[in-house]
Amino acid sequence: MQFPPPPRIPSGTRRRTLLASAAGGLLLTGCTDGPEEQEEATAGSPSLAERARARAAVDSAGLVARYDAALAAHPALTERIAPLREAAVRHVTAFGGARRSPRASATPSVTPPPSASAPPPGTERNALAELAAAERALADRRAQELLAMPGELARLLASVAAAGAAHAYLLTQAPTEGPA
Image 1 (cartoon, rainbow, N blue to C red):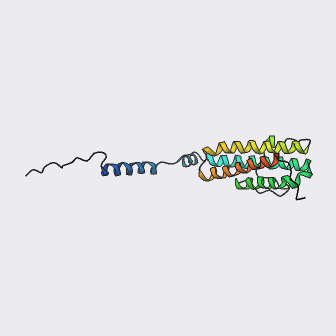
Image 2 (tube, rainbow, N blue to C red; image 1 turned 90 degrees about the horizontal axis):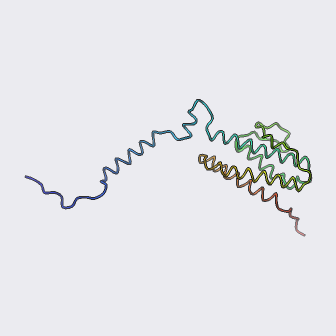
Image 3 (cartoon, rainbow, N blue to C red; image 1 turned 60 degrees about the horizontal axis):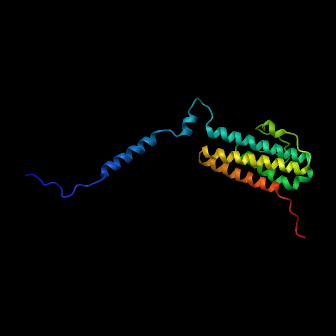
């Protein structure tokens, strides 16, 4: 005896086909290494994230050196810029650099770039302007770099870039006087 064809033929993709293709896609993506794993596996060289983290620590150490030069040349700025310098020291630590003493008496584990050791500007106003420019430039560069970084490092770069932008703003504002 012959069975009649089904009254209606299903249109579209069948459930079995959909599940099989989804499982195949999961197997393919589960078996491949991500970009980070591929970089770490290449001849023992540091990954993109490790290099970026080390560069960020060096950049922050350079910023600390700039603050130190400004403080040495203009001790009257200590109250105003010491908290910003301390934040830069914490950024060095967050990126894996060595913790530094409050007034840079310890030797850092990362060497600041040569441009960071430029002589301090002549006036307090110029010192603040140069610090603001350095903070702004570094914040902008970090904001661009974070786009290519993996999750946690990208979040850290974003946070430190935002802090740098805030520091640049604070350095350009006139000091506020206490209540009259």
